[in-house]
Image (tube, rainbow, N blue to C red; front, side, top):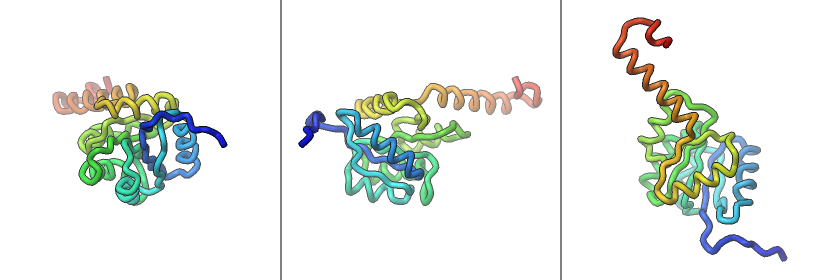
Length: 163
């Protein structure tokens, strides 16, 4: 019988992703980390809170766009219903307003979902120490958006906005 060499205290992870292949592969890859255990997987946002109440994850990895309820809305509910669970929002792009909404919902991190699994595993560990983890490319996109909005308020020309 194979022996499980995981440490006594594994990080318990809930994974919410609507693409079955993606969440199956991600769960498998995260499960290869010696200190991470995927304890629940759901494919719809409206299943997240119930799954978290049963599985009691330390961290929830939520796709930003899920059927039933968005990952952002689910993050806000988790903050109330399962306050000890830290939330990492996963996205394929830094669409307008996502980072701000994730922060307002209480998410501890905002990452691109196609990044290296080692970086995701590191982010899972870091949010448990109280850190906020934001993918640098997503942070830069949010900063550019904020700068453009500030320029729009301060100027009246399209040329100024294009700079």
